[in-house]
Length: 506
Image 1: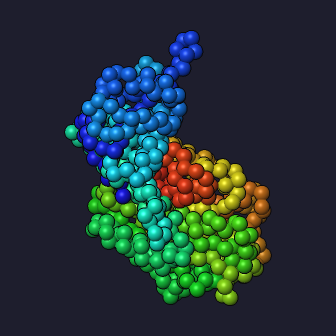
Image 2 (image 1 turned 180 degrees about the horizontal axis):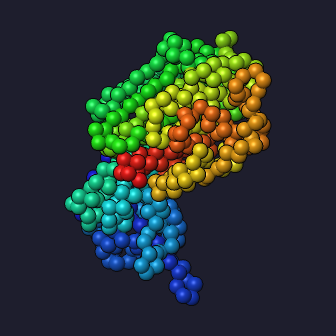
Image 3 (image 1 turned 30 degrees about the vertical axis):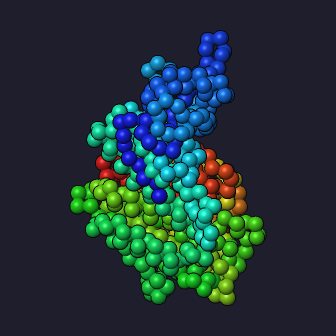
């Protein structure tokens, strides 16, 4: 795990020093690079010619571009890594902190296997220092898997020193500590998502959650786990219906955080399908490749709750993890079966691969009984979301102002979400003669149909939003920006900031 500390100097002993460079262009169209603030001491060791040296070897300053040169002078590191920060800000303009975070992440990822690195990027105030710190910790993430031989594996950079003139300023220290807490939460979610389903299933997920709550050592944070017997007795027909096709029974985890000065109550619900075969409505083989990530919503809400509790955010939070495996075993729910949900509503199962909304509905109904001021659910819910928005998450809900606020909050937190409607004309497509509602409606607009289904289980008068993160939750391609390959921890940063806003009265 990467540790981060602050220092006022950029020339200490390390394996590498990271500096930032801007892309520049003269009035005559001549392109080049300019050093960003923070690189002054390193440039002095080059006799003021570092930018020229980088320019000569082809550095362009593009966002995240990495250029390596050997160190010289009194820099006590053998390597200088210059990372591009994009176009140089004009007079009176500020460097975009999103760009700063992503470029810091790219640099940190390139230093895998190094023991120590100094980051001499722009960190002149708390916002910039926090962005660099968060980017470093997100970019340094490394999941080593379960390989028996690890000698060739490159772990994350061990220690990072953030060089800043504000090293002793309370605001800067606080911003870096906050970045550490949030990035640790994101990386916990990534670890959970990347864990193979042979090792992470409902019981072990619940046990991991219990262990994390205990390790957090926050007295106001408690956890309760309902096993299959308690779920049956409690009337959680949705979770039990989906989970009974597996030899590994389902769980419902309830995590509660209570702050003595809280004036608002936030409820979170996360989809935790630890592996999704599609059940009787079996998926094609190549559609199961990433289905260990179908619990990303549960990972996100749990990790965000831990982060808020560790920071003692003045808001009450109740979080539900709906955990099940969707398998086609002999006890599996069948197409046309009717299950009775928590609260008594009946659902006809017309597609067992639309299982996420069913396990989520039980938890939404239960969470509504807590009468929260705000109820959010997070799920890798539909393939339609991936087709529509790819890397962007979708936000739906019963309050347009809330939906807009979540999208804006996500952007401020460094994530991308997009508002989507819940058209009333689609509601009739989930009507059925056999039950109160069907878990499937028309195919077109499937993401929206799923949102309408979930809305049916939200208590009257409760503000609610649904975050479909199917697209951004898992990255099958090469890393980019602050996003690694594999589990991404999507929505964690947004949820933490929403909790902070709610706690501050926003």
